[in-house]
Image 1: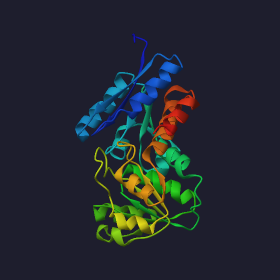
Image 2: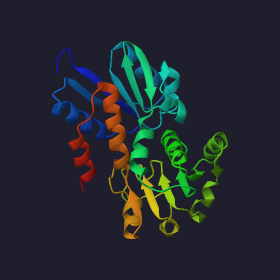
Image 3: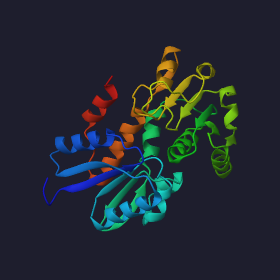
Image 4: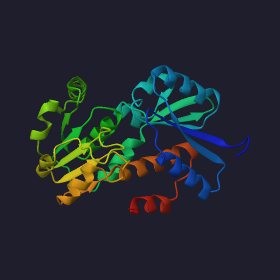
Length: 266
């Protein structure tokens, strides 16, 4: 590191290490003088200050995680079509003081579920935040029929109304059935014994996806796998969205062998 080192950061209320490991490994492998650091942010006032710092300190990129993917939009200058489409930002690039927002979650979701045949099939999405918005757009583009629910009924009802989706109250979640169930909430994060639905509910679906990446094998994924369901863990979405971020930040493709090795781990 020196005065010419290009800095990228990530911000989240509960930061993890995945982004730092992925990006810094890619920087090392490509012999690039770049560094990626996760940072904890807990309030909107902090968020505003951090984004101002990104601009003034010439921080080249900023990854945005829960719960700031929607709130951050008011503090940046431009939106890429991916951010406009989803109404959420998880990636910010800084080019000469101009901050542009992207949504690489959309790319990550499409890579993770793109081989599924979702045409006219019911997909139940649990959650109504920024990740859910990217998932919704990806599923719609693949022809799926979406039902949405969330612990806060108002959030999911408002989102369902806005995007013309079916809304189901939270207390009816465990009576639902369909082709695919997707957990887009933080339930199960850092908790090997927590799951967003009852175990019996999994019997009513063929495919289960969880966006949580820590632990890699959440209880939702473990139980679903034991029941013989097709599972998609959060790493599959996360690694592809991170690779897209890397490209936005640096203008270079992330090493393909790095992506492959992460997907094949454990």
